[in-house]
Length: 240
Image (cartoon, rainbow, N blue to C red; front, side, top):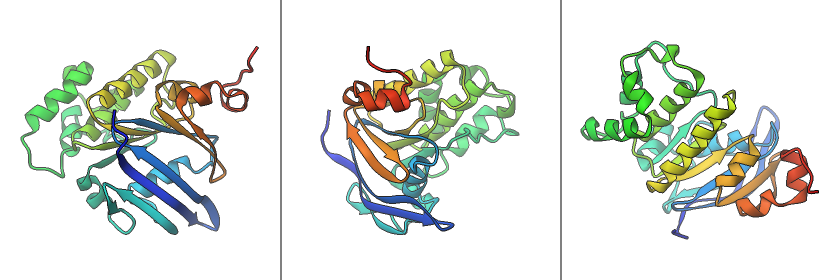
């Protein structure tokens, strides 16, 4: 597994509406790893992802991807560089079919779609079965699969996921985390924001804990899983 840095965030600050949402954080995302950001609501996790994606403007700092500065680039330019965000709440196009949603994910490149579609259908057989079904009629778990599949159609080097387990049944949550592992094994780096700290830390190579816009702790997934403070604050249990 590579130690090469794919994404480096240095002293990132994001202010909007008079709120200091992100207060000078620094994060490394090595190539081929799963990195997770955990923390309570309002900690700045989603804002960080949206700033990397170019949806939110940074106040100051640097976001460097493969040696290229991202701050100042448009969301389309950032997608074309190889970064894709699966937003919170899935946000599929409900009045379009599954296949149409997937094709939209490939808008940035002119490759033949068949190989990419086959790859997504291999990961998510249910999407093949429902290719002609309207996305709005899918279950929550199927919509999350579609959101991930649509993101993979752009052939990302870095896949960012914002709360992929939110609102899903426990059995489906397990499937989603299995899929994240599979995507990562295929050579895609994953930056994951997740409130289900237990599941996120189990699959993470490295994790950062955000509290009110600051990084309060960091370490390997296993280290944080075993930390008493993390267990009490985010896992709802103490060591016996």
